[in-house]
Amino acid sequence: MSTNRLSAKSIKREKHTIDASGKILGRLATEAAMILMGKKKPEYVPYLDTGDFVVVTNASKVKVTGKKMKDKLYTRHSGYPGGLKTETFDKLVNRKPEYIIEHAVKGMLPHNKLGSQMVKKLKVFSGEAK
Image (cartoon, rainbow, N blue to C red):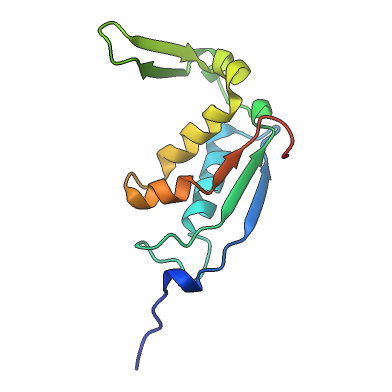
C-alpha cells in the first residue's frame, strides 16, 4: 500500500475575501490565519504551504472588546537609545488600520520561513477592495 504525497505543484489555491466591518480583531485574525495555513483543507500537511489567498477589506471598521481601544499598545523601536515608541489601538486604527490586522495575523502564523511565505498571501485594505 502506498501513500499519496502532496507536492508544491499540485496545490490549488483559491481567493477568500473577508469583510472586517463589525468583526472582532482576534476572531478575524484566527479565521484568516487558518485559511492562510490551509488547515481547513483535507490535504493539509505542516511542512508545506497549502493555504489560500486572503483579502481583508474594511480594516478600519474592525472592533475590539473591553477597554482594548485605549489600553492595547503597539510598540516599535528605532534602534537608538531611548527610541521606544508606543501607540494605542485607537490612534493606530486612525493612522494605519491595515497594520493592525497584518500584525494580528502574522502573530498567529508559524515564526519561520514557511510563515513568511504564508503572510505574503495576505492583502489588507482599509476600505473596500481595489
